[in-house]
Amino acid sequence: MNKILKRILITIVVIILILVGGFYAMFNKEISTMNSVKKIDDYGFYEVHISNDYGLDGLVEQGGAESDGALIQYLIKTLVKGLPIEFNIPDFGCSTFQAQTPEGEWIFGRNYDLDPIPGMLVFTEPENGYRSVSIANINVLGFTLEDGPDTFFDKIMTLAAPYAIMDGMNDQGLSIGVLLIKDTPTNQDNNKLDLTTTSAIRLILDHAANVEEAISLFEDMDMHASANASYHFQIADAQGNSAVIEYIDNNLSVIRKNDGEVQALTNFLISEEKYNFGKGQDRYEILINTLNENNGILSTTDAMNLLQAVSQDKVDSDGDIIATQWSAVYNNSKKTLDIVVGNNFDQVYSYQLFE
Image 1 (cartoon, helix red, strand yellow):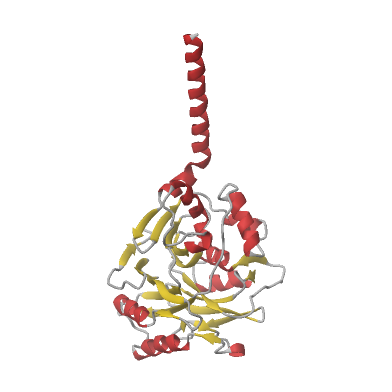
Image 2: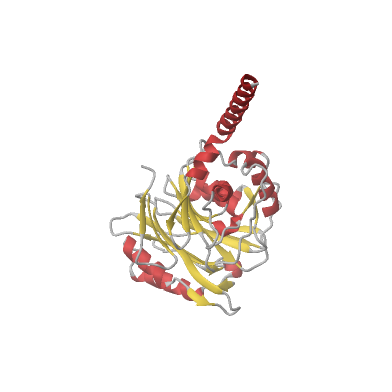
């Protein structure tokens, strides 16, 4: 009897080892991604290094996704193995600008303004695209400052972080940031690749080396704005090019920076057809005036100081708290990132990227 029990026990152990080994063989890259999650600031800021295939090629091959709901279903099927996820982009107010350092390097500044939420640096290295670092609002995935991705189960949701990004830079020195416009949601129907706001950013970072390539990708997609809102984008590259992407009555509008000009963006439209629609004119004036007064030349420290000058920490007219959740200065030339979290400009985290 003892021999029989021993054989049964050994058989059970072998089966468990086979199952565990099979599970690890199937999901080892996902597990590596989850194990890379770490908190880098007690405000509620994390980083993750994506090791697994996050499915952008498959999304493109199926023609994209026409809504947040369709994107969620795709991510549930391909990334989080059937587990339900949230995907809700809230209202936010932001600022972006491009400048050049005294040494001739091109930089891109970005404030992300919202009520207090957790954020995450997302490092990606796709097989068929450019490496990038981006910053995700992981409240989109259901996390809060009190309940972040700190347990193994919670970290499963971070597999979808590549699609919760709000700004970023790739290894070619292309940067992009998205800003809210409170207008009728963009919903194009031109029989092109269907993408939502954040999946469009993902495509740009993975496949555009410069501003003109990014514009071409926007021209070849049908934009379906997320969360019942509208958005515009600023893109900038290592060659000093910058452009704003807007949608006016579902028509793509591209505003390129001309030689000798500076370019910045807040939360109102700058296209001639609907100029000044929105808010953030006060922040925009500070950005443009500062850039013009300095002939577009700012050091990285000056750029962070400018972001601080237009940062927010107030209660708005609706009684909601709005504060700058992160301030980032991307150096498109040197491929570096300086980032401040939660308006704490005394603490700057610096990264040398893509070495």
